[in-house]
Each structure stands twice: as structure tokens, then as C-alpha cells.
Image (cartoon, rainbow, N blue to C red):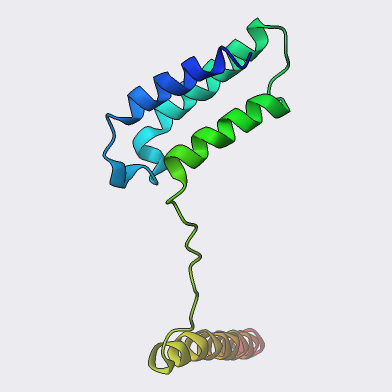
Length: 119
């Protein structure tokens, strides 16, 4: 198996040469190549009678990841509250609308009672 997997790695390397290096961290740029690579490793592993994934195949795949994706970082988005000028209206507007709708319902229900009683 370890003799056959490097063929998959070489094929993947050839395909990745078609992608600009600065796009290597953008999965959508090479997803088809990566799918072909993982399919190749699965086929080659199954061909020699091993299950996939297994520790040896995973080690090989990890090595490919280190070779091509070691410079890709996981930037976590740092969420911040919007400024007060935006946040306060976003909080107050729904509260005022709720109060206004409740008042409208009460007013309409009282008005309907008056109309029914007056007829």
C-alpha cells in the first residue's frame, strides 16, 4: 500500500501545479483535485486488501496536507457588537413595535365591543 499511495500524491501534486499557490488555501479552487486524490488513496488501499482510512493511509494524507496546506491558517472571526448608534435602534425598534401592536389590538377589541353593544 505504501508503495502505491505515492502515485496518488504525485498525481495530486501535478494537479495542484495548475492552481496558483496563493489559492491553495481556498478549497473551492482545488476541490475536484482533492476529491480525485482521496478517491485514489481509497482505491489503492482497497486494491491491496486494506481498509480505508487506516493509520498508514492517514499518515500519508497528513503528509500531503503538510506539503500543500501548512501555510493555511484558521482565522477565527472576532465578533464585535455594532456601535451604540446602530445597536440601540435595533433593540428599541422591536420593543416599540410590540407595544404599539399590543395597544392596537386592545384599542380594536374595545372598539369592536362598543360597535357590538351599540347596534
